Amino acid sequence: MTTLPTTSAAAAERLGPARALTRAVAAYSALWRPFGTNDGSGLVREQVPVAADDKPYSYEWPYSQVHIAALDLTAVDAAYESEPAERTKAQEHFWHVGKGTTGCPGYASYPVVACGEGGEGGAAPRRRPAP
Image 1: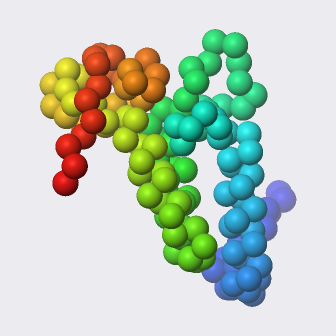
Image 2: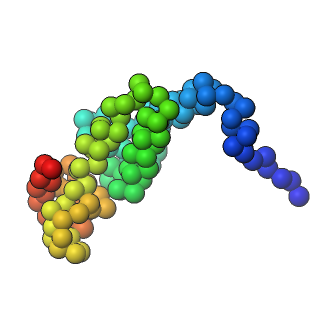
């Protein structure tokens, strides 16, 4: 039986912070090249290559993972400080005031009407009130 090598915390530490940062930046950039929509929404595609019947944007869970990647990158490089705010702004496309399955405000599974077809119910969206 062949055993695949694993990357331990010690092995990652031996790479050094500069190498780890370079790899993190390269991975984040590689995510945006094929998956970024470049339409000003800040959202990403669900899959690549895009099929003719694909929706224009990913669902909320895959997008949330992009958001987490931005947070992780910010933790290791201050140059990416504005990235989480951009991801939060884009994630607001999923905000749904109500008429979903619960009838309560919350995040829909797919961007609401203003940006796509709408999540659960597809009712006309309203922006979330400012804090």
